[in-house]
Amino acid sequence: MNKIMSMFCFQCQEASKGIGCTLSGVCGKTPEVANIQDLLLFVVRGISVYNQELRKAGNASPEADKFVFDGLFMTITNANFDKQAIINKIKAGLALKNELGKKVTLPNPPDECTWNGDESEFETKAATVGVLRNSDEDIRSLKELVHYGIKGMAAYVEHAWNLNNENPEIFGFMQHALAEITRNDITIDELISLTLETGKYGVSAMAQLDAANTSHYGNPELSEVNIGVGKNPGILISGHDLKDLEELLQQTEGTGVDVYTHSEMLPAHYYPQLKKHKHLVGNYGNAWWRQKEEFETFNGPILFTTNCIVPPTKNATYTDRIYTTGASGLEGATHIPARVNGEPKDFSAIIEHAKKCLPPTQIESGKIVGGFAHAQVLALADKVVDAVKGGAISKFFVMAGCDGRMKSRNYYTEFAEKLPKDTVILTAGCAKYRYNKLPLGDINGIPRVLDAGQCNDSYSLAVIALKLKEVFGLEDINDLPIIYNIAWYEQKAVIVLLALLSLGVKKIHLGPTLPAFLSPNVTKVLVDNFGIGGISTVDEDIAAFLA
Ligand code: SF4
Ligand code: SF3
Image (cartoon, rainbow, N blue to C red; front, side, top):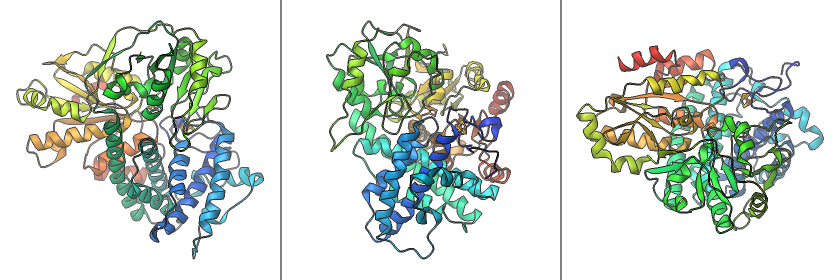
């Protein structure tokens, strides 16, 4: 590693200068946390190598399966800034790796398996096991593309696991992929096929989470969500984990404390079994990156179930109101421990805290509409098909993905505003906050922005596209009047992208910038084989898309 660099990370869209963060993360990650996360990933890969050997013998460790998705999730952008929590995870991982290693003999074990240092060696080792351990930029690029796809998958697998839904085949693939990227002799061709396979399993992971969510909470349905506030003190819940929300709702019932969703938790309001709770009052605020102002005015405690956390500044008044749980973590915040033996998490501390707080200050009023996951859209299929056949809808624009703080993301607001009135936006993920409060109207009663849900619900958009292909009797999904103009930020968007590629979707536009981790040669492979492109100006893009 270059000596003047104290860290190197390029996993998200906000990577410094479009190259990588080297002194500290734009996200707020310190070099210490960045490097210790690299070491955690190193341990996760070592465990994967051993567990895959055990799996071949029909003896995979469930503890290792869980450790792998958990460890990966902790390293997703904006999920965990708590150095000590990551160190503790590494220690637990090394102990687990030792246990597994006793049962396996490898002819040529990778460094990931042989190193078993104690805590005094963590820092020096961490500095050698990050992204730059691979000197060839194309190998590095593809290995990280797979790594990030697997990280995104890990998040979805963990949410499904929390709802008692697990798929050993997906665990097996994830660990196979992680074991493959420990290989120094892996070729570009092998990595390209591993990338495509990652996308295929990404579809399975999203389908699995969709099944877990809908079997527990019912199918998302057309819903109006209040964006104003009530009179009681509240808890604001952020992130993606519906099980945490469910338990919080049960434990706040009748306490006089209301619950509000923030950012990616908004789609919880679309599920019948969650929206039935009257004290789930509404959605407060916008996408994750606006939390600094919104948490000040919320007045009550905030629970992070996953990413995206923005570390509060020194002057913030809400730092002591932050709670984390699951894979998320922040130094100085209170961490709510995991479930033990299937018993619910204990949210009593955050509930007691809320009771002492003022109700939220209103920052907006009105309602937003959503709930257009596959079942709801397919229930409207006749209406949609008629609107397309009759010419009332000329095109659909899939604008799923992430939001972020870069100014260039105003593109997506302007894009939504300038789209012709006979077009419909299909969205999922926090990207929607760029246009979900605009008065874009409807087409014969079909809203012009159809929100399917969280980023993982991009799966719904694929199901809808496949259904439309069938209804219109088309051979190829790319013959549909659907344009893909996707915004990305963190690694869940990477698995969504790879999943769409594996379903055969071509000509996806990715913005606001292409990933820093794609080398020029790897970008060329994606352009040549899948027609992937970036974005230009709103006017140029709209003209090109409608041509
Ligand atoms: Fe930089 Fe993104 Fe990595 Fe944070 S996650 S250090 S912003 S590249
Ligand atoms: Fe958003 Fe963090 Fe990606 Fe889940 S909440 S889409 S950025």
